[in-house]
Image (cartoon, rainbow, N blue to C red; front, side, top):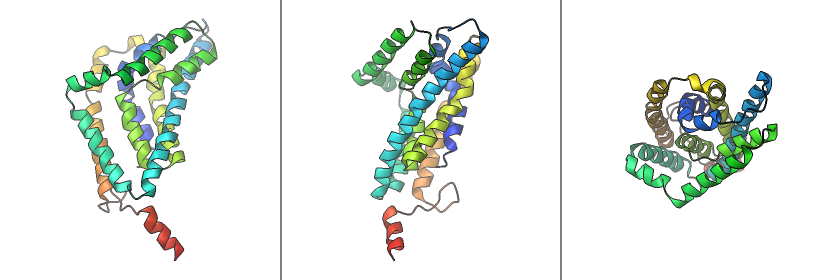
Length: 234
């Protein structure tokens, strides 16, 4: 998958972020009456999120690289596509059950406790930390992006993929933190309804890539690392 896809996923899916992280962005403390300082605090908050996503990209890019080294590139791509399709079709009851599981509650509890501690501070460092911790919040859109990072099969590519994903969400999240109170709620709901369709499209792309049908860019034939090494040896 092209690395630039990370930015596309982030930008097109960023309206979903308004509903998930928008309340957090709107609740950020005001560091100063100066418009410039307020802007900088919101920029630092969003840069913190991008930093966390970039770390995720490195970790999951490494995971994908390990799988590709044993010739599982095609299988990995198809599996990721199927997982995304299944997650989209899961009934709401199952998704709500997942949100009540202990791991989910532990992560959410840690994030909420950290936010409470940072809310008393209005330094630039605290806003950046706000963003870093925000990046750990469970989010379906982030999971989709992580699947893309895994498919890159490389630490650097995975990092760049997730960094671009974070930058894709930057404009909408920055705007939300500054003028979010004026964003129409009905517009958010309509855009959120498009997120599952976008996820299905991405899942189909993963599956087509794994099938290696020889379609340029969309489903190219993938060569296993082992085969490539044999060619080099000769």
